[in-house]
Amino acid sequence: MKLWISLFFLLIHSLAFANPEMIRHGYISCKACHFSARGSGLLSPYGKGISKAFSMGGGEYKPGSIAKAISFNGKMAHALQMRGAGLVKKNPDESKIFPMQFDYLTRLEISKGVSIDATLARVPYNPPALDHHTEDNFATHFVFRKATVDIALDKKSSFSFGRDHLPLGIGLVDHTTYIKERNRMGVTDFPTQGQLNFWSGQHQSTLLLFAPSFQEAEGNGEFGLVAKTETMVFKKLAVGANILAGRTQSIERWQLGQFVRYSAFSTVFLFEFDYTVRELRATGKSFSQFAVFFRPRYYIKDYLYFGASFEHVSRKQQFKMEESKYGPSMGLKLSRNLVLEFDGRLTKREKSDQKYAMAQLYVNLW
Amino acid sequence: MYDRQTPNMEKAVKILILCLFYGIFGTEFSFGKSASFKPKLEFNVLTNVPAVEFSGELTGSGKFLMNHTVDKNGAEVVSMESVSIPIKSLTTGIDMRDEHMWDKIFKDKAGLMPNLELVSKSACPIKSGKNICQIKGIISFAGKSSELLAKVVITKSEALIKMDSNFSISLTKMGITPPSYMGVTVEDNVEVKMELESTK
Image (cartoon, rainbow over all chains, first blue to last red):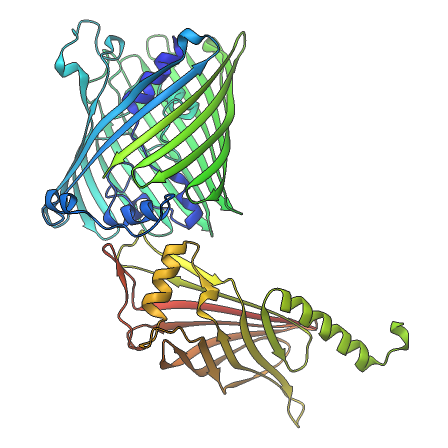
């Protein structure tokens, strides 16, 4: 059951295909390949070229006639992102193949430097994530992961307003990682926000205020602020930090995160450490938590990697718990539109262990 | 065996070993007075998209000729005489980007890629410690040439002589249109950093 809950969060909160591993080519800023300064989502034409060059087929990206026609001279961009997964567990009854994600992404340039970005996702009906009274109907299967107005302030900064994910840490895709899921703890990951973004070839930072997106379960709407910065301190070594302060009806939380991205010898190392303190507003009692994430990946080719992931989360005081998760990974970028990833995970809890292997196929039509 | 050799023989053996060593790595060298020679060359490219900048380096072979002499008054002089680099020795870490760079910047009208050449007659008098001087030279690639001014810092210690130079190459002055790819256009000036170090 816990696994399914995790997978649900992976599904509903995932903004797939952001790639912190691009540090291996010296790219620190997401803006290098994405329209959005915060990464994920639609690729710029240059990003599509890079994506194609790093795929198994390689070669030059040349937009086809349909892509040209629906882009209206570059004023619009579209993409479909789909993800299917196969899950193997010890109990064969729990092993399944299932669709995980179906998103439509679009961007419309209204005038020079002003654009609207939106991501509409098809999601499964899940009452606990909505409120407890909403019935299953057509509308409950769709959610806007993103709906923002972006205004370029100059070549190196922008302001955007609307619904978007919180830009914490190294920007992982997988929302089941402890640094994401256990820090969030049921609070939605795509609040309404006003954000200032700054970037260059050596630096990126974000400052934002956020408020509920009115899609959260009752009591989970959160108000707060986030500041994040990341700098290339040395060739292919980027160091960053973020702070978050948030408040819901029942909880206040403060989070401090530090993260490192480093690449050498065709290997990328991602490391993140988050320390969170929560206070129950009703009682004034607080409890702390830290989560650690480490992921080395060795790229045999730009399109093929083997790696591993190690995670640990520890919570103190009245919600005391310890949990670790680790396992091997591999990925193969078959083409610009097709990625195959495999993850094996062993989760160790205080009283039980859980093993599973998951293969995912990403299909990105963009 | 060694203690029977003359000092000149020892020096010759050392130079031969070093020649073999650098031969393995494909870099030829020449240096008037000392034995070992380590070239390092990096370049940094900015674009019209601030998030997209990249660097490249010398990963293959190259010929570097630096001269270190003592004039009749006993003063030491170092000069960077010539550099010759096969274009495919310059790489950026992404194969396709390398091919674009070689093709759009370094190919001449005949479709060939002559070596990047740097020739200079400037000489810098040096003393122990840090010496700063300006050198003039001619840089050539893609069948075109341009004058080059470089700031050079030469550090002389008992064990080594190190020459650090920084200069900028203007593509338009070379008669090359800065290339574009998918909306990303390379800026006109390419910053180059070259380090040559000799150990005695």
